[in-house]
Length: 117
Length: 114
Image (cartoon, rainbow over all chains, first blue to last red; front, side, top):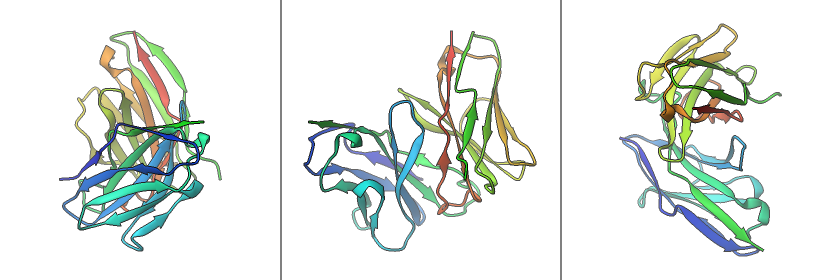
């Protein structure tokens, strides 16, 4: 079975400090992993994706994530937060090509990131 | 390339009515998935269509249905609306819906049921 656990529902940081959003997953098969961001009243935007290539994945806006199979984790980081990073972030898992999973993403509950000036 | 579009953006309905939401995928994308987003349940998968066929379905009652047309545009329908159907409905398109294909999301349709 597939599931995603985002360990923090809210994270607050000061502008210019590092960001860490934690995600653990479970998957019966080799997963693809994604981080999406959702700004207020907007749709979901892909930040980055892991699909069994390099374990350290770089995304847009300075974000990156590291796939650690032994820890079943896919934490999202950014060295220096910006005010515009304030949004909700979703860790997402997808599996490869089984009939029951085609076109289906499994979402974590989301982490709301607040950035203080 | 134009993104995923959804119409209408906002809807207000009353209990018992039915509603149809529309989604136009990115050109060339053949897979369209639908999700319901609520504060209580988060993002939940409704169903996925590929080449006019429903390939996958989430755990929603039969009041929720959908279809896909030959141009890959998709509609979802909710009949006999309930208060709990109030949500943001998101549509996403991808090339073929395979696990490594990223999904591109539309802005959503905000449905309010009174």
